[in-house]
Amino acid sequence: MLHVGGDKQCPPLGCPVARSAAGDEGPRHAPFKKSFSCFFFPGFSTLSLADQMSLLQSAWMEILILRVVYRSLSFEDKLVYAEDYIMDEDQSKLAGLLDLNNAILQLVKKYKSIKLEKEEFVTLKAIALANSDESHISSAPNTVSVACAIHQSHREPCKHMGPDSMHIEDVEAVQKLQDVLHEALQDYEAGQHAEDPRRAGKLLMTLPLLRQTSTKAVQHFYSIKQDGKVPMHKLFLELLEAKV
Image 1: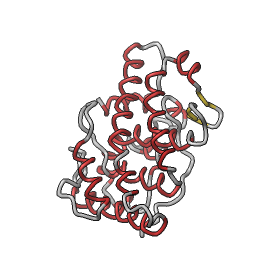
Image 2 (image 1 turned 60 degrees about the vertical axis):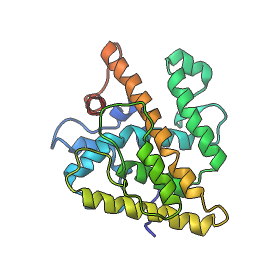
Image 3 (image 1 turned 90 degrees about the vertical axis):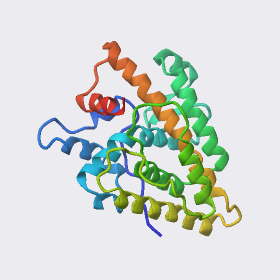
Image 4 (image 1 turned 120 degrees about the horizontal axis):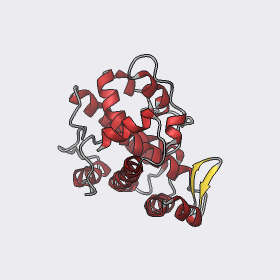
């Protein structure tokens, strides 16, 4: 079984991402990789630098949202963007984040009902990164991911499995990484939750909703960017541009 690793501190959702970024000096990808090094896991570094960047630029919002969701599991109707930044409904309204926060809370409720464990959370982050989508924003559910989740829950091969990104150089390498991650999740569930053979499938079925919520978040922050009233770090702006 692949050991995905512990969950390191990582930038919270939104503009705080930029505050944790390195300066603009040095190679073009250096600030990006330093800011999101906590997303990496065994096997990811074996991909080409171009494919690492492609996947990171595609999946960063999904992974940040998943982190917010996991931090919020022990709270009731509140989102923990950071240890010192917790938002309830009234604060969400004041910040203009009510719709987005309600969408994220739907994910919180779903993972609460499943009783998501840390090992599952870390593995889902890795799967979301390896199977990220760099196509233009769409609010439609990813039906291929849903179909593959069902196949994977029964350990059946899925002919649709493969990197969603249109800018992957070594598709075979990314597919192999996806297979390893799905096997890791299956092995964990078989060992820890043998009484629920469909648990892995239930977890994988949450990924389309995560992607929809990520789309909503990108659209929200991009509208703020277009409004021009809130200053944003160059790195954060580049990440938004890469998603639209």
